[in-house]
Length: 139
Image 1: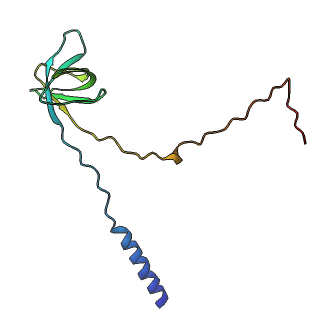
Image 2: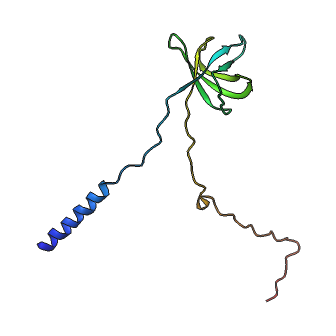
């Protein structure tokens, strides 16, 4: 009976020690940052020119959002074309008007360590024997 009580007590301690591990801290998401305004909308095109407020760079393919005075919103895709304080972006969805605020939200890229075990091993392909001239092997 005493042996069971000791084993039960040890099992409780093991379970309690597992429960006290603190969860890993996730990087906090930054709020969207005001980066510019819609400066130009060509009438027959699906792109806009963004006038940046201060120094700002965005990689091609970055998604930006806009907000209008009447709660309009749109998604823009940065094209990578820029000249001075102006940058081009393709209109992906929504509606924009001149002067709409343009926001960028920095989302850190996931850092995955290079795991050589995850790559499939290189397979060695044996040479193909010529059917007309098979090589003779000496025993």
